[in-house]
Amino acid sequence: MKKLHYIFLAIFTLTIASSCSKFEELNTNPDVPTTVTPALLLTQIQKDSYRFWNPNPTDWGTAQLWSKHCVLFDPNPNPYQYYSSFWPFGGFGSFQRLTSLKRMVEFAKGSPDEPSYKGMELFMKASYGFAMTMDMGDIPYTEAGKAEDGIFQPKYDKQADVFVSILKDFQAAEALFAEGKNFTGDIMYGGNAAKWRKLSNAMQLKVLQTISKKITAEQKARFAAIVNAGNLMTDNSDIFQLVYSDNPNATHPFWNGENRRILLGVSNIVVDALKNYNDRRLFYFAEPANSLIASGKLATDFDAYEGAPTELSSDKLAANNAAGRYSQVSKRYVTPRAGDPMLLFTYSEQCFIIAEAIEEGWVTGNAKDYYENGVKAILNYYRTLPSAGTGTQGMAITQAYIDGYFTGEAAYKTAGTKTARLQQIWMQRYLLDFFQGKGDAYRNFLRTGYPNFPLDPATSMNPDDKNIYPKRWKYPTSELTTNPINYQKAVDEQYNGFDGINQTPWWLK
Image 1 (cartoon, rainbow, N blue to C red):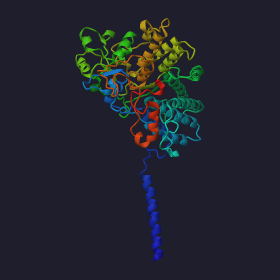
Image 2 (image 1 turned 180 degrees about the vertical axis):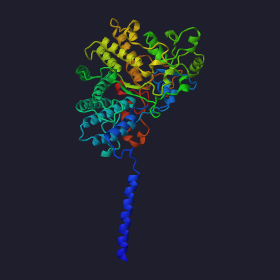
Image 3 (image 1 turned 45 degrees about the horizontal axis):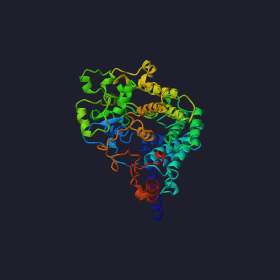
Image 4 (image 1 turned 90 degrees about the vertical axis):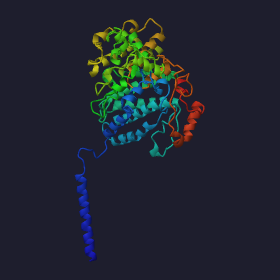
């Protein structure tokens, strides 16, 4: 009987094993990958990195306030419009993706496109570090993403050293992309290694110009070497952008946001600059003011548009908007589901960066040519937008218009002062970021002081000092418990022990 018992048990075990095997076969979805590839990891990393943090019209509209491109007409004041924030903290969350980037490279090992994936790892880390250090100051960079190595409380690197490391990583990424092949999983450039190489060089120029107050002679020489080497963006085909679609999970954040649009105006900084240049982007960005149309102005008249003062109290702005005094943002932004792409870095911005560097003597060249090429490129971008056929008030940008753009105030002030020329460059760069939801324009204002961002102590919501501009975000509160020693050391050494938004980080001193 005991022998029969063992035979029965063996038969039962084999039957169960066979059934389990068949169960797994029957319940495996052939449309779902069962193995992870570097391409799959990269796609997810890029989605998480480049999508707007909360894609809805309200938050997208709020994101336009910090850089003074737009003005909110809600009678309840929005802190972002008045130098404060609902959440005045930066964060290190992006560094959590460093582990996934490490796995991505491991899975690509031995393949022809391994160098390109290695380049992506370095490019992404440098991009995360650049954003974080601009937000907060000193950050953990060299020890970031090393929990697997037992480093759970990474030390903070000095901001000057962070910039050096970022530049080193962008440079290494460029070399890897030059060595690498085209690769898969890339939702930004379609795996074109040559375009990533150009962007890696362009980002080095941007980082170097960002630290213009602190830049060394050696770093200026590096800037010139990158420009002279020529592996940079050449036209709009190299634009680094996130393209939206009609897919419900990938639509433009402001799509179907009419209820928010009617409470969102274009600032007088933007409107006045566009009118000063006779720039037809005005008709792409804004609606004419209802009161001016009622007075006899036409939608095709530049004088039919009126920007709103960013520093005016929210109740006055709301009342004036109700009276039709201001230009609201264009209806064009809420109509097409795909909308305009999010411009993360453009050929135009590269041109303006180099034009400024020429004016500062970092590199030889013709600043006027770079200025004009940058303006032409962004105008041509809007000329060829799929949504450009509607919502432009009958004043669409044409090639003939672009050809005749550089007259009057739009003409490069070759015979003027260096300051006047720099202000032209800075204003055109400022206009690039309209309705893009980025903070670059505010940082450039902190660096250059232009364009002037009005500050009225009576309406400022700066919690620590209503008379000054915030210069950074505070460190995430989680650092107080997860990395308290290194956090406190960074705050003490940079900001005399006070982790506040008005403290001045190294790059602005």
